[in-house]
Length: 228
Ligand code: ADP
Ligand code: ADP
Image 1 (cartoon, rainbow, N blue to C red):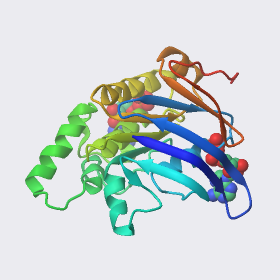
Image 2 (image 1 turned 30 degrees about the vertical axis):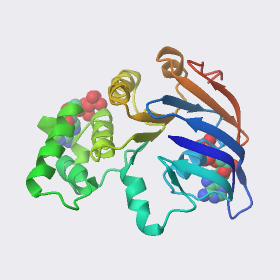
Image 3 (image 1 turned 180 degrees about the vertical axis):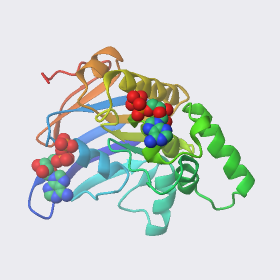
Image 4 (image 1 turned 120 degrees about the vertical axis):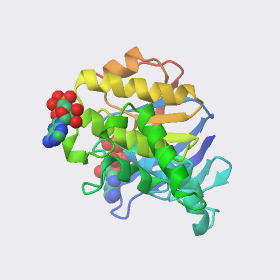
């Protein structure tokens, strides 16, 4: 569960990115975050995985109130939230296998169980035969699959994606969306910022629209609602 109450975010340069966000997202929902460039979508998302802290307001993620949790608990929060970026953010010198194994929390895990889990997620995203490749040897869609595998390897309850199809052609984007849907069908919450009108209007899910740092629309099975 994700809860935000009266959340404000002003950056050190004085820009008010979020101006009073109130929202509740239940476990297992699939939510699109839409809005014009600069509306506050990325800031909204960054607050959830604690990349940024709110200036004021309350944020609760899976029963953890973020401004109350001790620094040493942050890894537990991070383990429960997988993040996927537009530009993949893979480590270029590590193989596909190593990029995923690296993200796995290794505490109390034997090398054998790590190997089993990495091969399992690679299979889930259809890349078992690319385990030894470097990111630069893969297509954009394949690189995004690696980053999805890395995001889910810890079996997080929430996966957050910031424009995951922004660098991909339409066909590849649909395949990536299919993978997100499969992850969601197994009960994982998906929060996805997107500019893809096609995707939002075709694969219907909850739509939260942000403008000037406030939620202006929140609809189940909503429409994209902007001309692109
Ligand atoms: P979106 O993802 O919808 O494009 P952002 O959350 O990135 O919106 O940005 C919201 C506003 O906050 C914009 O005016 C942007 O310039 C500003 N902003 C974002 N990140 C920073 C930052 N690190 N420092 C200062 N201002 C920022
Ligand atoms: P797409 O057209 O689907 O974006 P590419 O044409 O870039 O993808 O790649 C097609 C296939 O060739 C992919 O399976 C990818 O792994 C492989 N490939 C692409 N570039 C390289 C490379 N430099 N070295 C090895 N394999 C590559």
